[in-house]
Length: 161
Image (cartoon, rainbow, N blue to C red; front, side):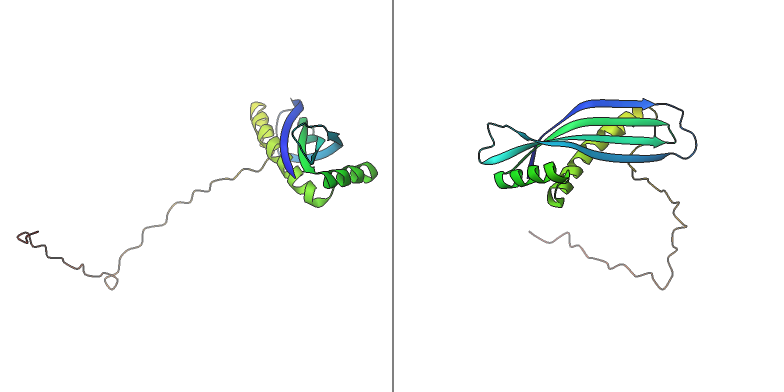
């Protein structure tokens, strides 16, 4: 499976209330539709268009960030047929396709959601690493037993080269 295209079809962000107290953020991805896509360059491979919705809900009723978009994947012809058949029957896709697809969507949407959250003065929808600075304790003092004499090196300035 190769992902060859990605685009947003809808971007929406709304802050309803001021952020006060504890904020819970729920991120969710929903696959809306899988369909065959016609590509002239695919050769013996098949292409599938995946429509998705990514939503970050800030609770309690503080804000919503919403993205809709499409991902274009290239698959082997047999895998494409099996994937579309399984989707049409049960609206599920196999784990070996779902994991990289969902992770790719998350990567692209989380970056955009992070930027939008900052524009709306909202907490990040993605946990960011935090730096913890600790004050260094008093530097260790050298003990007499630990002190080692320095070796001296003689340099002969008269030595010919």
